[in-house]
Image (cartoon, rainbow, N blue to C red):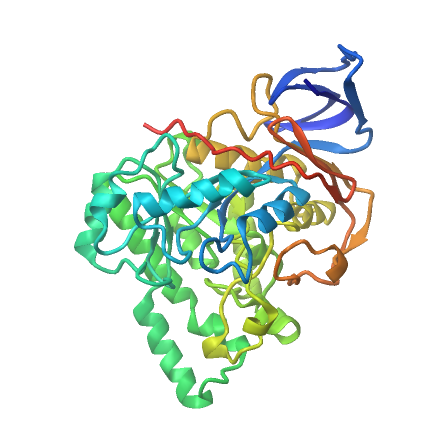
Length: 447
């Protein structure tokens, strides 16, 4: 039995930062104290003096592309990138090929992850217009929730039948996560720009095609339906100022039936960055204006927005070089999300305690994940050590995504993840991945 003793860390947990030691034994956090002495000769000491010890981040929205799209990425490659970035658990989306819209196809993804994942994992069950029976078979103990695309779908996954939507919302107590963009509005906008530019629409029109109005129409309808049916709703990747009026900070997170997420890229980029980054920052929903970005930051800090995620969605550079109408949306982010947020801390935008709340504690609370997301005795030892005084530059040589690129390439970060633990195993240390596939299936305490 290997034990680890992390000494002299600035431990970040539940709104406080305190200096102390953490003892890891087997898969769990055994002890947290101001000072701990090694209990045995085979205890491995890690001196974290000057560094922050945070719970491993939980990314509630990723696309790891397996099965069916593994030329872009796979669970093994992207989970490696995740743990190198301090993300120890992920929830992956159902729009792989084939779409995960039956229990059998869903379980096939779990089996792949059981064999290959470096991080803890769960997979969303996908809803369609005609698979309600399969959706209702989903086990709330070992599946994170139901994912519905109310816009920007892949395959048969656009759920646009109102009766079906209402049935799903009213038939399950599981969390329903939604992608909200109104397809009718987007199609009308796209037709207008195609008439002017053909297929070579400038990418800086993307936020006008996938507009703020398209987002608001869809998200407001989803929230109205959730209120009508009593469904537990989580709205993914919000991107507009207008949508912020739909969410509240008047009640504790534990009492919220409707919760909200923002992604790192919507906090980092604006439409002005299309001029230099081009299609590399083409996401759905689109990166929008400076005004939208500042409204997202305000809502994040005042707790109308509950979670920071990545929507990690890699494509090859060749795919990203296509003309606008055939260029896919999405970009990789899991390796750089935590340090990007620490960079915003160093610029005075957010506290470290708030980063941990939004990337670690709140995903665990919202999805009711068992014994993760906190630094507590008896919890799984999913941990990351962050040093805020080890500058580095994002370069092709240090990018771990299978696609081999990042929209943050060339960015200078002052912070670095030095160590990552998953289930008590050291999976990443000082720039080197260990060959330890330590990930486990996440379990949930959903009613």
